[in-house]
Image (cartoon, helix red, strand yellow):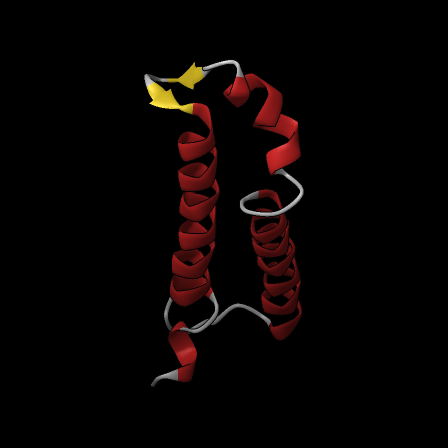
Length: 82
């Protein structure tokens, strides 16, 4: 994107809502009610990519949260520090 032509406020707000929604979903799915979706599989000794299912589930949603924060920093908060 061209530095002399910053994104419009409307597109930044839309992106902020999308990132906030994804972050909130990840926050709920990681440690909260989302565990009930995988609990039966994990109780049976299930693994995902060789990791215990509950561990993989929690780390995956943590990675989603981290990606949202990095995206917000790079795309939304970048202009505020200058």
